[in-house]
Length: 262
Image (cartoon, one colour):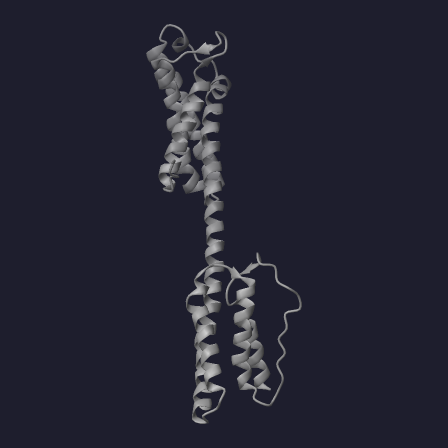
């Protein structure tokens, strides 16, 4: 079984290795002879472009482009391309082709046509990789925010709910009411649901509504004879429906609180 690599740095390293291999294959292909020509000269010239692309990818992009310093970024790009041309024409060609290409300068345009495609491809794929990484981080942040909001709602219900119902239970116990055992049983069921079943991100809607009924039965004890509470499920619930736990209870709790305030 193939294990998925989760380390972002290792993923990017593998991506860069694969990209360099593919680009070098196309770079070393001789269109006139229609075959691959791999020698030390081609490798050295290719490394000149690679070093320039890596300088752009890992220094200029994060330092200038991503910080919206566009003029400085363009200025540095011009300097980098100029350095690549100078290295190619003034150093490498004089070393490897002293009697042919190293004897004359073909012009800036000719050198740009040779250098820009390779550098643009390597830089463009790095830019796309960074954009996908940022998008993934944004999605993870959005999920974390939603989970924190859900945890906040859960944390809101527990202390307030327990405080009210323990007070009610204490009052009924003092009166030796026959309702006391039923209150304890319903409270136990709700607490069990909160502590154990609500650990999942989603629970069956049927279970949530069943516990919502117990929650309402406990909450309406605060009304006594001052009002009427009606709770109905108007249609059968499909078994596959699921919902985030305790979401509905928060709204019902607020409804009871505001009803009692008047």
